[in-house]
Image: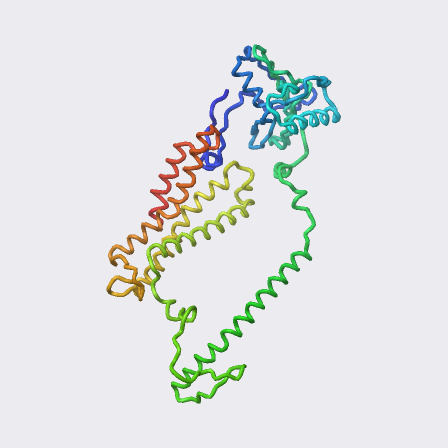
Amino acid sequence: FNTLKSTYLGESLGGHSLRHTGHDLTFGSDTSAAPVVEECTTKPLSQEQAAAFVKAAEDQWFYQMYLDDLPIWGMVGEMLPANAAPFPKGGTESDFNRLEQEAAAHMKVGDIGNADFKPYVYTERTLTIDYNGDRVIKVDLTSDPASLVEVKPGLSLKFRMFIKWQKTTAQFHSRFDRYLDHAFFKHQIHWFSIFNSFMMVMFLTGLVALILLRTLRKDYAKYSLGHDLELGGDEDEYDDDGKPLIQPGPGTEESGWKQVHGDVFRAPRLLPLFAALLGTGWQLIVLTFGVILYANLGSLHGAVHEERGEVLHSIVWCYVFSSIVAGYMSGSYFKRYYATTNPRGKSGSSDVPMPAGASMWQATMFLTVILLPTLMTTILSGLNIISLVYGTISYIPFMVILKIFLVYIFMSVPLT
């Protein structure tokens, strides 16, 4: 009871910290008519324990449990008016509606410690388990409003859980369908809006293309005429406005974006850093498509929503194997443009000094290896510290950090 359950890497990264509830569930015959009852009684609540229950009721805390990987949720308690009438045993829908209205009234007031509201906790719950053959299909947890007990220091609480097993004809492969919002995905697709947006994009793209073609046509014709003049052609060529393509007088120097044709094969400034950024970008692209492909292949390994932390687990391993892409792309880019650096150790006409050739490829490799991990480690460390300060369970334990570091050192770095 209350012992930590061992989790794998993806679960730990997702903030899942599971403990055994201590409930003894035996897969058996239909017990819907005579449910199994488990109960326990607490010792008289101390001041601190009562305050914890009060805070849980005021802040609307809920708990989450898993049975055969199926999640269920339940409320700890409610804040109800001091003069609220008790709920009858086996409440009807109207009783649940009244409970929601009274609980919503406290949330609307929003005054913690308001004397008009008293903290109550649920002491009785019904766990209904539907099964088909030897498979668990559906799990429901219902809290009985009639079991609400006001929390007071020195009070002993008696908790009871009614466990019902009942047969169903539903199939195992459809048991997660109720957790997916099918109503959302069945909304009508607004094809007219999609077509309208598509036509607007096409119109704007065509407009920009026309502007660029009109601008570049004159320059292209001028460059072509210059080539013809070198071959002995006629220089009396005019543009659409009747102006000569070759202006008389001294030649004008190209400026701005027209100088791109002379720079595309020149090594950029800070070549190692640029090559590392390029390799990291390709790695992220491959990582993204790899995770999407893995999620779409759910029919082979099971849907990703059926296992806790499976998406995070796949992200870690896709990152490791995509390190090959990062190393290849950064190395090939560096090799292609390193030859354009001048012998003085500077990149083209730039005045920024470049490192010596013997160390440039080492700097490229080093930056490719540490660039993304350093950024992610900095961000996650800050978030982890905040989680620890506020006492949440979503922090990443030290052993998980150590596992990721070992995977990075012994797999990702060599592959890069």
